[in-house]
Image 1 (cartoon, rainbow, N blue to C red):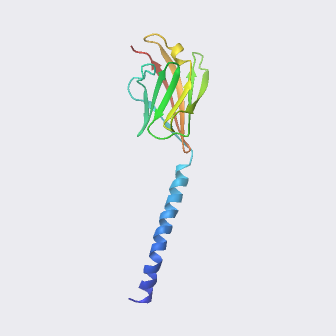
Image 2: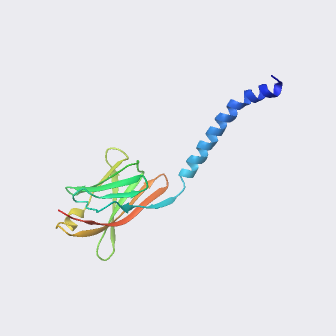
Length: 146
């Protein structure tokens, strides 16, 4: 074994570890860039009866209302989430959601249940969920079906 081969074998582990660290830093930096994703409803959306799923790729949000508390849970941990109730004149009322048990579960007390009390009633909502600089947004209608 000549000295060039010995030097190559000595330097190789340091280059491999350095390359791994550099690629991790690059991918983490790329993940923090601001991006916007559109969420779409998966089937019929009925928040009152706990049947509302929004999705974009593998990411899903499940939105439900239990006794005046609107709950959002997700397939990935969120940094923050905001729900907007939009009235008939297109004015939105923001409800910042607070973390419940973990970054997967968010909730806030809302007036949603009083806005769609009867079967067949619908109401426009908007949601913004933030994950590491990525914003998942949606505007959708919840219609009560009993």
